[in-house]
Amino acid sequence: MTNTTQPLAIALENCAKTFADGTKALEPLDLAIHAGETVVFLGPSGCGKTTTLRIIAGLEEPDAGGRVLFDGEDVTRLPIEQRNVGMVFQSYALFPNMTVAQNIGYGLRIRKTPAAQIKARVAEMLGMMRIEKLADRRIDQLSGGQRQRVALARAIAVRPRALLLDEPLTALDAKLRDTLRLEIDTLLRSLQITAIYVTHDQAEAMALGDRIVVMEHGRVAQIGKPREIYQRPATRFVAEFIGTMNRLTGATRDGVFSCRAGDLAWAEAPQGASEILFRPEDIRIAESHEQTGLQGIVAAAFFLGDRTRLFVEVGEAQPLVIESTARRDFGHGEAVRLAIDPRGLLVL
Amino acid sequence: MRRDTQRLIFLLLPAGIFFAAFFLLPMARLFFIGGSGKTGWSAYAAILTDANYLNSLFATLSVAAATTFATLVISGISGVFLQRHKFPGNGALVAMLTFPLAFPGVVIGFMVIMLAGRQGLIGQITEFLTGDKLVFAYSLTGLFMGYVYFSIPRTILTVMAAAEKLDPKLEEAARSLGASPWRVVLDVIIPGLKPAFISAGAICFATAVGAFGTAFTLAARINVLPMVIYTEFTLSANIAMAAALSFVLGAATWIVLAVARTAAGSTVAAAG
Image (cartoon, rainbow over all chains, first blue to last red; front, side, top):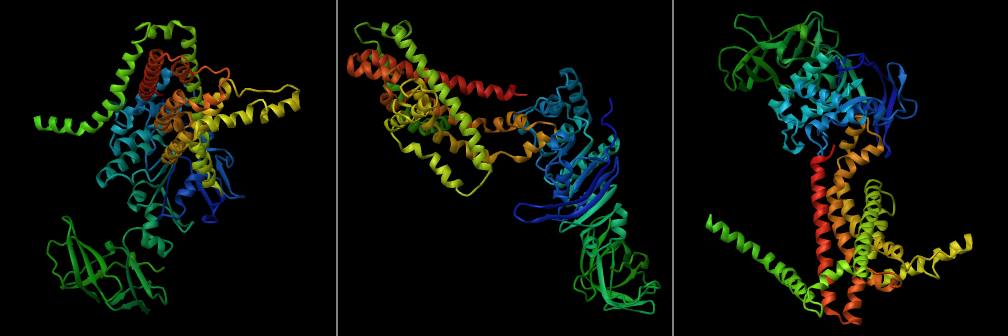
């Protein structure tokens, strides 16, 4: 039994959304989502990511002039019940008056599928999510993780053309989040279904997305593969929203960037760069024999087991975050010399 | 363990005293008075054998059931609507809907007469349109209308409070699975409102069974049980029969409500 129909390509053309009270939730947006791809909408609350998802789902209509295309066909005016998209919500939204099995079979029952086929499909879904034992439970007897598995099974059971997930892991505790994230990843890969995943958690976005759409104030800030977004952020907002970013301010002259922490040789430095950004993994505590012109004072050190996270004061607004794997203790107030890998430097 | 039991008994005392004083003792007394007349215990049998009594018992329960059903449909639709669509005057409209609570049954009966009586609005309109005067105030239909009118305020606030707690995400989830708006009502909204429907419906049914003022005002061809009891008690001075009828009325209402409750409870498991 196949789990989906052919994967769906989704396109948004000029989709904007203004709410009745005049709030502009989404600036005009053009976006092409390839068949079978997992796209993650990432951004802080109020950035327009959920609105975009709801427009794709058919729960919201875009403002006049906007179009939603499923495999090239205009579905803008088609209500959600005719779009055949699976949805998974943060609050699970399971039907409390039905058992687990009835929840999973609901979409098939709506489609008037013969009872025997519903039974077989429900059993298949229960097996797939490894919740066979829960089939006859009531929803209020389930834990959060179990509920979200049931919600996933219910959405997939009808073989939707696309799967839309709205912060599905946000309500779960950290450990469960990791487990389910892995399960969702495996599920999406095995189904090869087009999936759109909304989250404000950048770790989830990085782990699950084939591509990430970073949004801010109703606009797309950057679209790209997780690695591009992380290593080559297009804007400061993206740089600072995703991962940890260190910042040094100063001036560049003749391939040398000078700041309060000292001088940094950087041959490819763009003329006039007054601020450089880099990730914690691109800076390290220099060995005693190394040549470096940068130094700072350890403001705080947290031993995390596999590494030590250091906050090093260098006279900037924020201390630098450095992850050291050195097998030694760092004392508060200790002077350290710093080495930066110029390949990781960004100027935005 | 022993002390727990003692404490439980102690805590149950207020409810127990109340229950005994206002329910058990009067009901028991009523039961025995019912059997103390000239005909003895056959007064109870008469309720089932005498067509008059049996018909009025049946009419009473039917009109109460119809009232409950109609009231829940009207309150369900308007309650959800008023909860979801806030418009200017929304609060005033809700306040107006709860207005009939203040009216005695007599006033409501009078209003039904003004609407559907011999000189009523409906009569005038139908006479103008068809030449025939439509008059139904003095029948069970008129009684039903009056009962629905005063039952709506008793249910609509309960329904609105329940409608507020409905999770819109449930409706979206059902729609994403292909459910039409009608299916959403059937599978999500009605099950979500069911506890409110049961509690509001119970009050509605019990009130309609016992309502007297409206029936008294409209009294012409109506033969509901509270009217029969009144007649037996005051006009015929047949106290035993009145007591027997009262006891049966109370018991029948109790049974109907108990059955409705159990049926509603079991559909939770059987739903889907």
